Length: 176
Image (tube, rainbow, N blue to C red; front, side):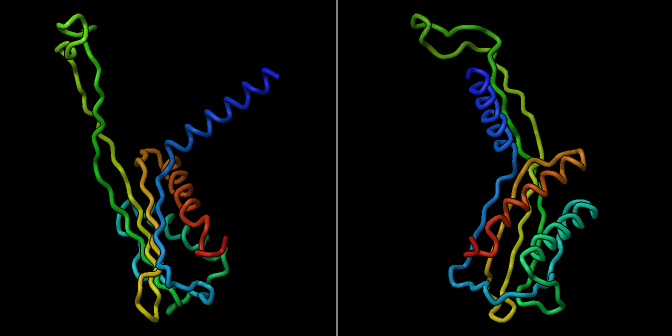
């Protein structure tokens, strides 16, 4: 019994850690958009950021998810798809104290001086996928995914695929 409890606790801990480091995905849908009659799509703007290989992985990933839902790539599709990639540098401040204790007031005062706050910089990448109705020219759907850019291409591809899986999990809207 204890072994099962430990295994369950470990599995929950592992899944919590995996979800914390995964990409943050947001979806926005026009409530008036009707995807029931959509059968074709066309690219109007392919990703313009990142490496050429990553751009191709994004296009291939989006194509495979749309085609898995029965959509076909066509020159003048019902939906126009565009994807954009941006990256920005962020800082993570890590605070720690080189002295133990507090000043004055019986140990309940401000922290001791000599605290250090080294800055750690990292790059955050954002993928934005837009879908516009070709006839009405109205925006119908937008998906965004953000995550820490990885140096290893295999890890970056895994992050991209996880982001696209989350982004297209309930696509088209109203299907699930």
